[in-house]
Length: 62
Image 1 (cartoon, rainbow, N blue to C red):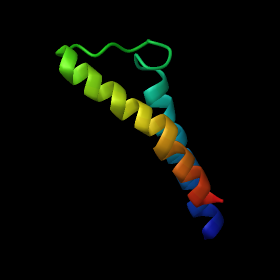
Image 2: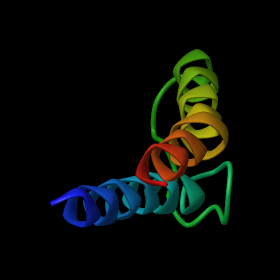
Image 3: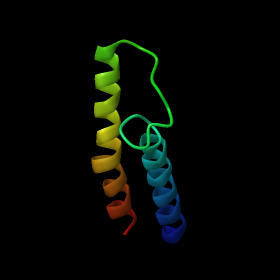
Image 4: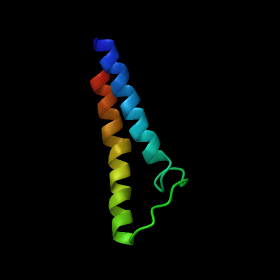
């Protein structure tokens, strides 16, 4: 059961990191069509996903 939870956590973290990586912060494959202020907030959200959420899910899975 614990192995299943670890796999789900890693998959969830990978999905979050992948969605952040295809945005403007990463590869730029996805563009946000909103105001500049909102784009800055979304970039911060993507950075938090890549540098905080994904590593935390991997550590929780370990």
